Image (cartoon, rainbow, N blue to C red; front, side):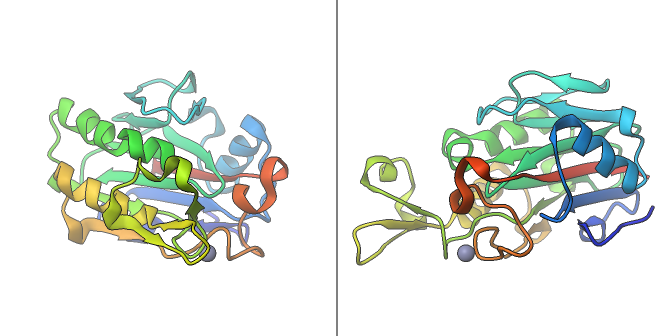
Length: 229
Ligand SMILES: [Zn+2]
């Protein structure tokens, strides 16, 4: 395994010593499937073992046991230790899930819409349906837009639980998406002490991360990978 300066190695956050968890920086050029394959190759994974969900801001979460593309999916889990989950994000939360000692792990793309509509609850459901206890999982929320920079207007504010909303003087609202995610995860049955949130804002840290809110349609993407040694 060679982790280079173009990505963050998050593996040490997981109690399962065989888990490898990666998040690319802006400096890593991530174009489509080729970008994911290059990152997989550079971080010691087999590029042909990738699970590539076609993300649509849905709440669809699936268990998938063979490599390749998966249509209309924003959360992908596997129990095949040879496979590598992948997602791409730019402000949305990359949420990594890994069982403490069994080969069962998943990677979820959670933007505010997915969060509001329950993608984390669907993730919990996917784990439970496969006879795994949520208390056996470590969960990590990677770099994403934080409440310093995530604002919404009147038109969508009703969709958020008021506990995570702060009204600003200019009439807009700040939302704490990570706190909202934490609340949903704990409510689902994950243990709060096994949930790690990285307080790295993708909007503020322009030198390190792409941000859709900052750069609009021209924004690049970061890639998340999750697999086993
Ligand atoms: Zn910020």
